[in-house]
Length: 94
Image (cartoon, rainbow, N blue to C red):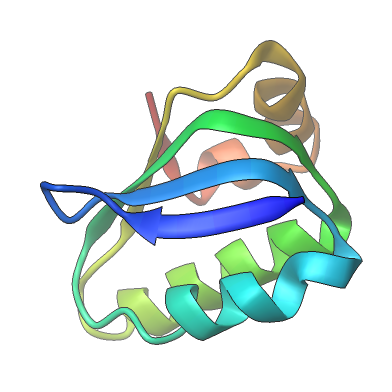
């Protein structure tokens, strides 16, 4: 199961498992962003390549406007996935 919501401070909250079966849900929210946002991974257990693709597409779209995503609260597994895929060079990660 995957859920995406907006927090009280405008941050994007991800929870569950972001895989190919859930990518359309994430696409609808992430590709509609028009300003820089924090994406909180504290409740995300897993991200598949399809999820990485949506993050990258959102980052590319935002960067054209001088904006960006900032990824926070990643678990060790997801942090490793982003590092080994080179996404740590594309995103600000805390």
